[in-house]
Image 1 (tube, protein in one colour):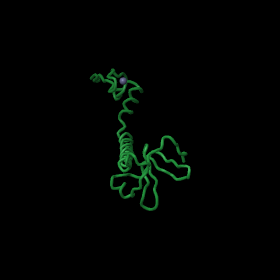
Image 2: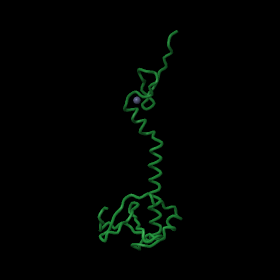
Image 3: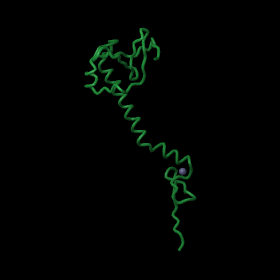
Image 4: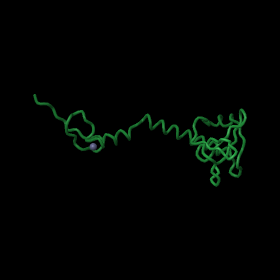
Length: 130
Ligand SMILES: [Zn+2]
């Protein structure tokens, strides 16, 4: 009996694959390309965090009127809107040493037990990075 030989094509570039019949890719390039495009776990993790950061930023923006440089809001209010305190992009401190936590261009400082002061990042005066 002769062995049945099926023609196999690279699932990335459709080139005919030579060699072992269990190969899915014609070369390492195609393998890498495929693997990079199909990383469901790490991709969805990155997407989820990006969404959380964007949502945090939009919540801060929605609570700070455009003409107001800073406003006090309760932590409760932020949480109510879905703010996730564990996600932020960077931290800065101003000249008096007070630390702000930022989600992109909007930041907050926790004051007391239950309040936050929300600010937008001052692009003219860059505070020192912690
Ligand atoms: Zn290929």
